[in-house]
Length: 311
Image (cartoon, rainbow, N blue to C red):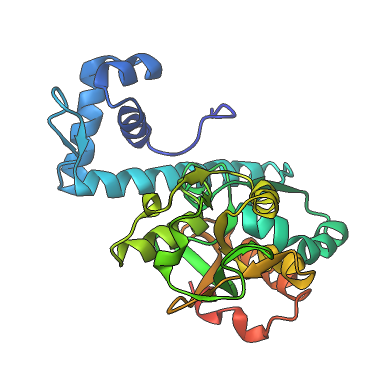
């Protein structure tokens, strides 16, 4: 008889996942209460079945082959799906866990999300983190779907365009560069405020700089700050510069507290997406959630990409 918490995923797959997580056969064997030869036998059986080597030099430096990386991603997704299915089969209601980046969570979805949260019988849990962290949490099964700004693997994730937004440089209204036509070189004597590594906005700026001769540390000071409200407050009290989505500073621009710099040859628009794993058994639920959310916006119905429903 199956015991709750024991899933129908093949034991060899579970062994493989544990070996990869430990990067050590002996540690994996101890955690799984198996002998090391049994663990080795499980890995060899998988390699025989898939006709590909999965792990290179397991007794020296641990390294997955390309096939091993693919199997690990697939196995984690299937293990998460097994957990979701168990919850469904015993009719145990669990919150829908939705991720959102800091910019999107604070400035773009609250007004759209409020009617959905109030009218739905479904319970929700909102996780706020940077793009890189949210993608990792979805791969780990901790977050089910997410609103992200940055890059993601379109082979693993289905996606719907949520919004396109301008990415702009801003300063306080009394900044020496405000209301002037300037070049990128004119920015460097001033401190720069950027988000932490892994954030979508930081990645946009770094990608842009990588296509030029510059880098973040071309600025006199580069300050890493993980809070948008603090960045905006610092701008109001310093001659610092930051690069953000226009919607993040819409109110401050409207009331004249902050100014968009007139920066030559700098025009960046980036998409924000709603994403979830293609193989997730609840993907139809996520699609319906997104459709309900977009009913509360002025965004055209064409924003919902029907192509991704055909899966």
